[in-house]
Length: 408
Image 1 (cartoon, rainbow, N blue to C red):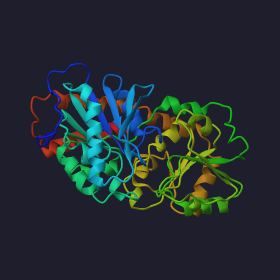
Image 2 (cartoon, rainbow, N blue to C red; image 1 turned 120 degrees about the vertical axis):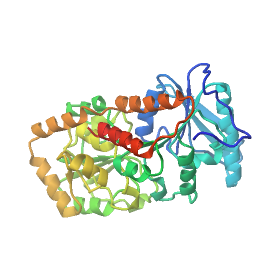
Image 3 (cartoon, helix red, strand yellow; image 1 turned 90 degrees about the horizontal axis):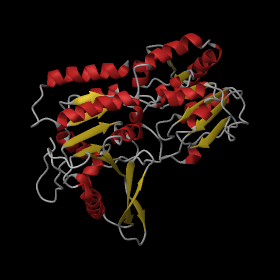
């Protein structure tokens, strides 16, 4: 499914490989924004491939187009297009195409793996002829606030081109499995060692030290997916509880955030710093709104909270309920009174038996295992002499088996 029309395509050999394979990631998420699924996977891919992350452009007046590149400590090359403000959409796409071709030129002759997080990248990358095209669908982007009008059309095109489709949760898998014969479910995984550090005593970060206990915390992006009314109602009902909010505020007006004395907006923090904050929390909570933008989400932070040893209450997000709530690992509550009751119960519940259940559930999950399974599917696709048609029913069984393995 990787064939593209002839013309300006960059050609990458399928068979004769000079040097390591090249994995080009086309993403709507910036590397330094929040450390999440793309960063976990790409850092592992960089162990045996040259990994290039092509980010969305930055615009400024009166500049010449250029590509800023840097290499992360994990070996991932980050490429950021800088474009002059005022370009029309066609000019933006054409300029990005030229910059992308320049980035890839030194790797000519190597096998290229194109890894898409956003279908919108086809506006400047549709001319590529990768050996393998992967669509790692971690969100239903068309339902997010400010989604481009052509996103649905481009996703349809990407699904036709893709050799492999990975999804970040069960709900997404169920939405995509009938649209591609080789769709596989890879739910949120966990770097358990990193977050288990929060179970040990640690010095309280300076900006958290004065916040009274009990502390009930959230970390992650703060956007239209958060139920601000629920958060405000909880804080108003329980002024004796402190609500600690870590994460960048995007796509919403900061003026709409509830501003009560016991809600503490600390802003974004690095992935490395998170365990030190979580170590000082009493409970975790995920006050997600119930709307179109949360319909298919499978929050990576769910197993991270659990690995940190923090009992957790969430609104009834489908994947949270099915993967964690039904197993008794996460409490589910829909409205402020039920949420407050669930938090109150967890404040007094013994944790030893629950922690044993948590550790048993997380034992089969790791980003290393997730990447190894993905990598095996990519290798199998690379090594095929020609793409053979796959029976839809058999592939569903394979996908379901993958989903079950990931969910253990």
